[in-house]
Image 1 (cartoon, rainbow, N blue to C red):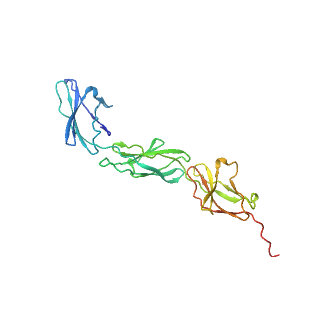
Image 2 (cartoon, rainbow, N blue to C red):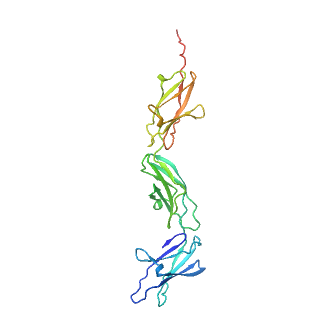
Image 3 (cartoon, helix red, strand yellow):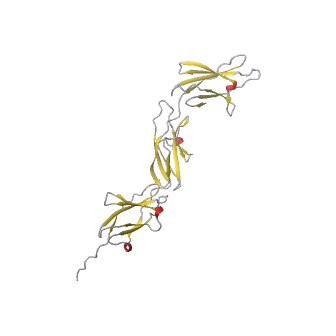
Length: 300
């Protein structure tokens, strides 16, 4: 039996004995919610067959029916002599595929190769078959069918390839099949935010009373994705951005020069590395002072 929102296909077996005349048609008797009855006639030319030789007939007159409505079917064969008795009856309780999930997002990046997805469970259709799980599709391939495992609205993807781009969507599952794709298709790169920059130092040789040059090294861990830029924040001014260094513009060392300073002025800065996932959480404040005249001697 195959059920959709607009039709029901029934299958049955029929073996015509040697002495019987050929079947000319089948009559499908339909009783709807114990309120109405009617008969649908199917000529032999309207009949199709499945791989196993079962007869298939389709009731296409159900589009106005509602979830939880009940239909009782039985079928009989007809030849030029007359009609057979009816077959056994079959009761169909109308249902539909579940609603699609929504608000698919990354709840947590565990490490470079694992992250946890989270989504909203849509309200069940009243009187419909209960949702029993979710199918997760990664780059259009079925990654995991959770209907046989845990039923919840979170799942952790493991064994991802750092730096690889992924597209993921999910579908709800009930006994009739899968819903439409989730209303959100999530695109992400595997990996984490980078580590902190290292070896942040003042370049004394190339600094003076009006300029401070700083040098630093890239993080020891790029989070599985290339560093795209370094952002310098002003810790003395509500952590506003002072400047951004794009890695594609770098020709040699990682450095930055503060110019047009007053002698003795201070700079308190935070430097954050960024990859395609985001910027790191470094809150280290680095203090630098522009050169001044020397202190006076003492103890002459």
